[in-house]
Image 1 (cartoon, rainbow, N blue to C red):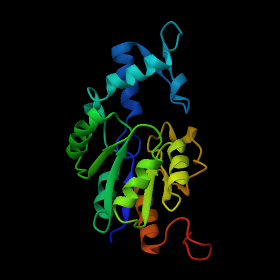
Image 2: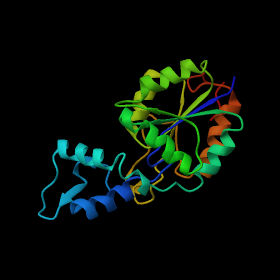
Image 3: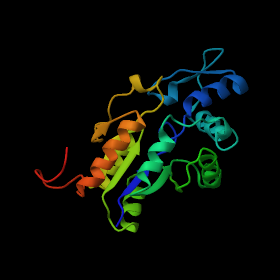
Image 4: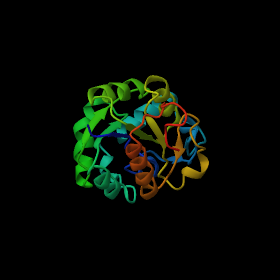
Length: 213
């Protein structure tokens, strides 16, 4: 049975916020400030901020029509190709289901061809489902958002959780997710960490003294 890597896409495999920022300025005259508080990151020229509903509508305008703007995170393609030699890979992305084929095609254009699953809300249940579907192998989960690490920790505690924020302008503003086992923002080091978890053959919740660091 092969181990399993479940990875997020935006700010893990592909840059998103830098391109979303450019589009907001060009198309909507909205300034976007890099911050952990996404809801308050946007400001119009008159100083007003979009409502929560307007924010989601703006995101809906970016996905899928503006996805072509997104660029690949350095070393992501090479790291996945290396990991795929010994493991199964699933891209678990929080997009509406109608964006699934767009995400598949987008990743393929960057040389990343793996199963893509769309999700809404916390990722814990989706991760638990994928783990069970693959036969409960040693599994690593990679995501940039702490809320998803907390969700996975609750629903699938045996999964190794790696926090990654691949946008260099955002990474210094984001602390390590408390529910993640490690924080690594570079795919070269991340691939080493992931493969070490696989090589251990142990789940993250193995009894003390059995699991690797």
